[in-house]
Amino acid sequence: MNGSRIAAIGHYQPAQVLTNEDLTGMVDTSDEWIRSRVGIRTRHIAGPDEPVDELAAHAAAKALAAAGLTPGDIDLVLVATSTAIDRSPNTAARVAARLGIPQPAAMDVNVVCAGFTHALATADHTLRAGAATRALVIGADKMSDVTDWTDRSTCVLVGDGAGAAVLTSCPPGEEPGIGPVLWGSVPEMGHAVRIEGTPPRFAQEGQSVYRWATTRLPAIARQACEKAGVAPEDLAGVVLHQANLRIIEPLAEKLGAVNAVIARDVTESGNTSAASIPLAFSKLLEQGALSTGDPVLLFGFGGNLSYAGQVVRCP
Image (tube, rainbow, N blue to C red; front, side, top):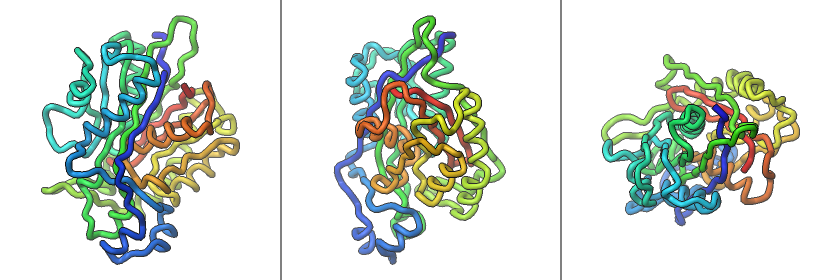
């Protein structure tokens, strides 16, 4: 029961960039309209020959390389996604096959935008219990597959991408690098964020989500810090689900993390659902905005009106 830590993290985004100007040729919108409402400038879009498991595998390969590990060192693969097309094989098994991971436990976790932090907590619990020693935890979504590109209220939001973390067990005497999770949901409001129908399409009740996120979630995020024994003002970074700037900025301000770097990758990547937290976290580390050992709050929220957050130490 020694806990776990993040050994390395990596991310991947498709090459195609869709700008606000590009969207003006597809729907009745403008760059000013999009920026003023959600703060997004660009997003990356995967091609028809780039499935979710390919995005996930690219990010996972980068994280493995950064950790100095081989595929054979991994015994658990968890993929947070809500946009996998096929039911079986699951995305985790396909990622394991792409990377040559020989005998992992392989599971998908579908908690939509809060998927990565749920999967991270699940992997941490598994390592604490001794059921695994090294895990790949991936958030990957291809939101472009489930988007109605004629609906300007949703199509301006989304992007595709993946982020991955390698978790290892902590040796005896080492302080855990992943704090206790605080998670939950509001099932009676689950309809507020949906991916349903045939074909499945993303839809949401934007005002309901905005009110919930900006009024209810700050106190929950502070509780996640309390569980880790870290005051918000002592955080070096805050990585919230990259929904849009109108949610991220007031939530971060109400949290009281006055000295923290606040991830704003949504401006470049759009809302990438389960990929958004590891993608934004990986970029902050790559840019040198955070240092090894820094305490960072990861806090996911969204579909089902689920939430999950924990304080982690930077690899």
